[in-house]
Image 1 (cartoon, helix red, strand yellow):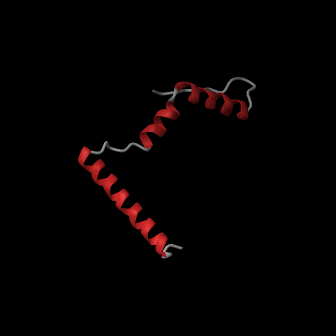
Image 2 (cartoon, helix red, strand yellow):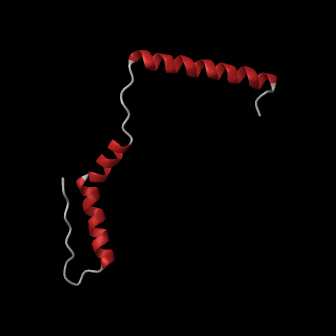
Image 3 (cartoon, one colour):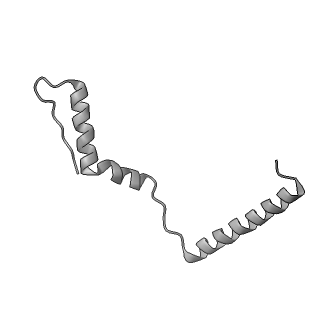
Length: 72
């Protein structure tokens, strides 16, 4: 989805940048780029379950160490 902004007669550089920014926001290009930048593949059910169990186990270990005064 190409976007072209041409400098108008007697338009300052700041005005051009402002118009360009507005056009980018309005077109949704920036939102789409950010969404694609942080894309993560969906995890399988097994992977989700394993990750949840691992987090729970680590949380319990942390609480245990905290009671013993080993965590700083």
